[in-house]
Length: 120
Image: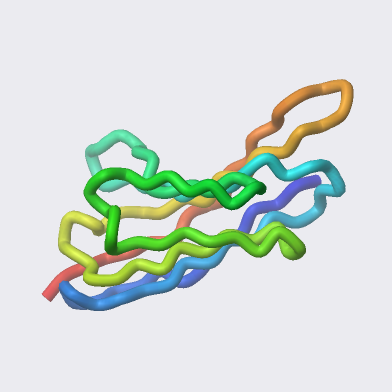
C-alpha cells in the first residue's frame, strides 16, 4: 500500500525560506513523477511544481525563479526548496505521486499536506 508523507512546512516571514520534503513508500512499481500542489482557504487546489522521473521540471508561473523542485529517485522522494517566500504563497502544500502499475495503468496518490504560512 502506497503512503505519501510530507514535512517541512511552518511559519516564516516574507522573504524567508522553507524546504518541503515528501516520500512515497510501499510501492515497487515504476514512478512516473511527483509534484507539489497547494490550496489556500477558499481557493481551488492548484499545481505548484512537478518533476518527472526523468528530471523534467514544471513550475507555476508565480513561483518560477523562487522555488526549485528536485527528486531522489532511489528514495521515491521529492523536495521543494522555497526561497523569497511571499504572503500569497501561504497555503497547504500537498505532495502527489503517480505510479505505473503493470496491467492496470497509472495510479495517483496524495499526501495529507503540510501547512506553509508566510506572515510578518
